[in-house]
Amino acid sequence: MENLQIEKLQTLLIENLNEFLLLLTLCAPRRADGPTRLRLRPIRHKGALLFQAATQIGKQEFHENLTKDQAIAKICTSLAQDFKQLQLETTTHTAQALVSKKGTVTIKQKRKQQPNIPAADLSHNRKKHYILEEGTPVPFLQDLGVMTPEGKIIHARYDKFRQINRFLEFIEDILPKLPADREVTILDFGCGKSYLTFAMYYYLRELKGLDVRIIGLDLKQEVIENCSRLAKEYGYEKLTFLTGDIASYTGSSQVDMVVTLHACDTATDYALEKAVKWNAKVILSVPCCQHELNGQIHCEELEPVLKYGLLKERIAALVTDGLRAAKLEEWGYQVQILEFIDMEHTPKNILIRAVKTGKEKQDTGYETCTKLLGVDPLLGHLLKKEEA
Image (cartoon, rainbow, N blue to C red; front, side, top):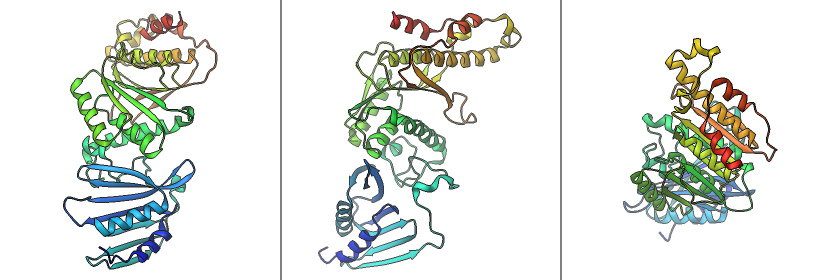
């Protein structure tokens, strides 16, 4: 389309591609075999203002971070070849550009009656802010059945969407604790279908631009094969999936962050022991099915409570996680027990977050507590061997 009124478009883009841009969308594709949508939004990377372009082609979405000049060039080329319409929204106004077959550009702009405050100042906005926003298509969320190609969250999977974002909030909090001068290695034990593994990679590599390598480990060969296929499809070169057991894994000598989500029963203990052995800077663990101490716990003073099987099971599970936290504190970690997702969605909602402090070992009362309750947790044994 040689007659595209390029100056009109360039003027519109020069005026609006800045930190006040909320979202720019190219739509109304010109051909069936081309891209169906292109979305662009501003991001900060190493202090510089860039623009992340997400191009939807079929079921896949391709991302690239562009300077302002590169973004303007890409948008103009895309409107000449692939799309008929541009829509953008800033904090103060909206704009629309229509491109005819002959390249004629019609631009309409409308000022908002109540301009939005900049995105960075939305902490008191009533709308919940998610790290992965609804309305922005994300390939792995589509393939995992959480999101439609248009970026809309499937109603039945909204809890999963909230869980993923909640997990990324925990990741966001500990970013300053990870090395910034080299590749960061993250190991995800018991990754399963890898909703959160893909989310970690997408957030850290695609959105934050960090140099990370993530390894997902699980026992199910079929699940690992599917995750490996998806990682290759998305071009996630530093995301690897392996079939294996947590207790016997020896594939890495240095790991900066260990993630273990819903690893069943004592599999969590083996993962925590590995993390301590590697001197991992960060541990994120959501335990599951804590059966080990249920058959051990015995305390005469608590017998009026423990005689009820359901209460004993729940108390044993809480004691298991509390003692895990205490043992990690002994090994120089600052530990928090956090709510992963609302209790109304699942009772398995405790997250243990541990950050290495470098402090000397301290007495946490671990031995006194285990003696009182008549329990002998596996993690204590594993770390005794490590200490020896």
